[in-house]
Every structure is written in C-alpha cells, then in structure tokens.
Image (cartoon, rainbow, N blue to C red; front, top):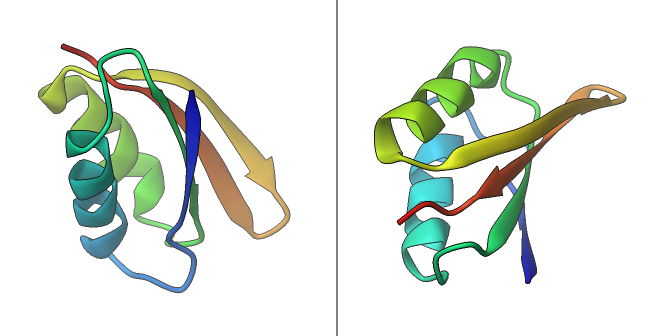
Length: 74
C-alpha cells in the first residue's frame, strides 16, 4: 500500500521528522511517497533511510520538488 506525505514548504529537519512519524504507523513493506522542496533533503532523506533501515526505492525531481519513494523496513 502506498501512502503520501507532502512536506513541501518545510525545512530541515521537519521533512524527515514527519516521514519518521508517518512510517512508524505503517506496516513493514508499505511505501511512503514523500514530497519535499527543502534543498537539504537530498542529504537528509537518504541518510535517514539508511540509518532507520528503510529502503529508498526512488528519488525523482518534479519541478522544484523531489518525490522520494521509501519502503518501510522491519
């Protein structure tokens, strides 16, 4: 199941903190589509996924924003 989280307009560390909170409520294997426009997200989101054990499946530019596809780990 895919869940959406729009974190545009939020600056570091809020996009990652909101993603962490949303992922906590999801089942293992669920997918979160995270939309950000914070320039720091290109460092923060991959680092968060690696540290938390989630799989960063994709990162795609969509105009001024980035859309991150994160699969919840165990």
